[in-house]
Length: 179
Picture: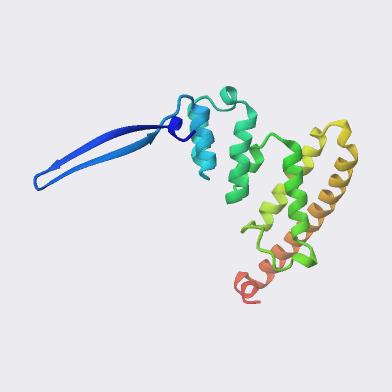
């Protein structure tokens, strides 16, 4: 209950012309994982990850809690490093597949990519492709489909990036921005 999570204390302020009495409540925690869980509930995954690191990180809390912090950072802030550090291979692959689906014709006005650059997308797809080897045997069909889509996307995105860089080199960055 909420009362079990807080400590109350009384503050008396005795300013010269003003005497004030107030009751304050401070949240109490007996374990670091309670602090981390509260920070995650409040939508502060980076602070939760900092607390976890101070108290021993994955060695102390296990991968699940660390993954939850990293997943929240990825989903809320598109933090590339956080996604790279998620140990759940299937989650990383699913995120790459989701990003591939966001680029379709029916989603051309979609802003869900959250400011990811072409280089970011290429890095995510390469990371997901590398993780396909980590899937278990029961996910072979999923892995095969993911590998096929990821390889194709990496090839196409890489080709597009090379052509864009070549175009920028020939015409200069100013003319590429103006078009």
